[in-house]
Image (cartoon, rainbow, N blue to C red; front, side, top):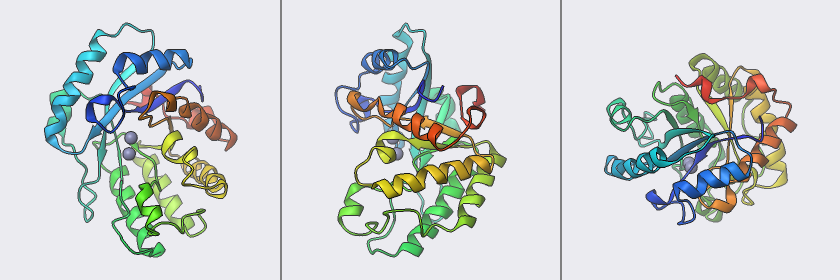
Length: 255
Ligand SMILES: [Zn+2]
Ligand SMILES: [Zn+2]
């Protein structure tokens, strides 16, 4: 089961992923990889993009596959004070999204201030986990490459500065709300912006969260068809970390 799911996949429609990510192609790729359950979760950063999601829904309706396929969406934190995300209940109902995944996509800093950046990320991740609209917190501690290049988060070569209390607090909140936390292949585990030391710490981090009761969701976050296999890298990392099958999120957990 570690290597048979992918609960975070993009499509060509929102223009973040490339043209290889048509809905039929990504479903065929999932079948070829031997996956059993997937979620298509393209970005919704603003309401005007809902129409693109209608195209995804239309394409999914035409697919014939034995795969379990969930129609989902990835949302972003849009208010750095409250942690509010870029979707509301009315939009979820209108499109019929079955799964909402979401998280932070910026450090909100332009100077390398590790403590302030960690505090901000923790506060916003807590808000996402406690948001009843969100099923899965995506890619904790992911930052855009430009923020590494600019030096803002270049100090993030491991998780040594992350207080244990923060890990426990997040894991316990996730357990209490039933919001899962993501193990993401492309964004984190095979992303060469992060080094080996970071990845080793990250596996321990996921295990600690799971041991606080958080469910772990495995995904590729593919924006190119060739990256879909990274969900299996994520799955193996989760298994290597000692996370047990009962600690994994599956579609049966949908609220
Ligand atoms: Zn993301
Ligand atoms: Zn994504």
